[in-house]
Image (cartoon, rainbow over all chains, first blue to last red; front, top):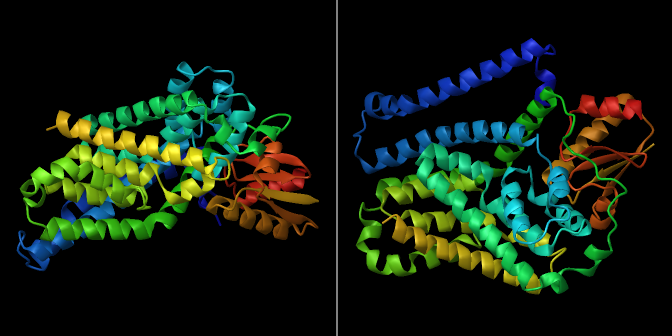
Length: 349
Length: 78
C-alpha cells in the first residue's frame, strides 16, 4: 500500500496531514538538537570532550539530522520539480543553437526532474529533436553536477555563500564543458542508432495535469525510494565522519598544508571519481573534514567528483556514447572539477 | 489486453511493474505484462522519462510510479 492511499480523501484532510507532517518534522529536528547532549553528558555522565563521546555524539546527532534534512529536501524538491518535466525541457531546447543553448540547457538541467535511468531516453530524444550534441551534454552534465538535493543540504549545513559557489561552479563547468565538446565535433562518437531512432509521433508529457495529491504522492514515493537506496552509504559516511570528528588531530590537514595544498585537490578528485555514493552519504564526511581544516575548494571538488562522475552513470551513457566520447567527457569534467577546487582554495583562503 | 512497462530496469521500473501486476490481480484482468528495456523502442513511444506504462499501445503514465489504485482506474478505463 502506498503512502498516499493511507492519506485522508478530502482536500482539507490532506492539507491537515501535510501540516501535521511538517510540524512533526520541525519538532523532531528541534529534539535532535539537544537530545544527545542530555543522553551522553547527563544520563551517561560522559565527558563532553572525550574522544568516544565526540564520536558517538556526532554519529547519533548527525544521522537524525541528515535523515530529517534529506526527507524534507527530497520531498519539497520532488513536488516543486514535478511542475517541470524532461519533455518541457526538450521542447524548450528544440532548435536552440550552441552558446545560448548551452547556458539554457545547464540551467534546465538543475530544475528538471531527472533520474540517471532517464539519461539515455532523454539523450536520444534530444538528439532526435535536433538539439546539438554539445547542448544535450551541457544538460546531462549540469543535472548531477548541481544536484538539487546537494544544493539543499549544502544550504542547510554550510550557508548561502558556499552553496552559491557550488551552484555557480557546476553551471560554468556544464556550460563550458558541453560547448567545448560540441566544438570538438563529437557527433562521430555517438552510437549510430541514436540518429536512426524515430521519436514517437508525439511526446508524452510526464507530469502535466497531475493533481496536487498526485504530486504529494510522487514526493513521498521519491523519499521512500531514495532513503531505501542510500541508507547504507549514509551510515558509512556518517560513521567515517564521526571517527574523523572524534579521533583525527585538530591540525591534521593544516600540518600537512604544504603537500596537501598542492596535491590535495588532485587526490580528492582521484579518490572521488571511482567512489560511488550519494551526496547525502558524502556530506557528513565533508562536514567532519572541514572541521579538521581541509579547505572548502578541495571538499567541493571531492563532492562534485563523487556525485557527477560515477561508474553506473558511465555504464548507462556507454549505451549511446562511444568510449572515445566517454573518455573525453570524463577528462573535461574531471579537469574542470580539479580547476574549480584550486580556484576556490585560493579565493576562499 | 497487453500492458507494457517501459524502462531500463531501474528501481522505479521495478516498482511500476509490481504496482501494475497488483492492479491487474485486483481487477482479475486477463492481461499480459511485457517489459520493454530497449531504448529505441522506449523513445519510439515518445517517452523520455522512465518508467512508463503502455496499455494497448497507448502511453498512460510516464516519469513516475503511480499508486495501485491509480493504475487500477487506468486499466479499467482502457
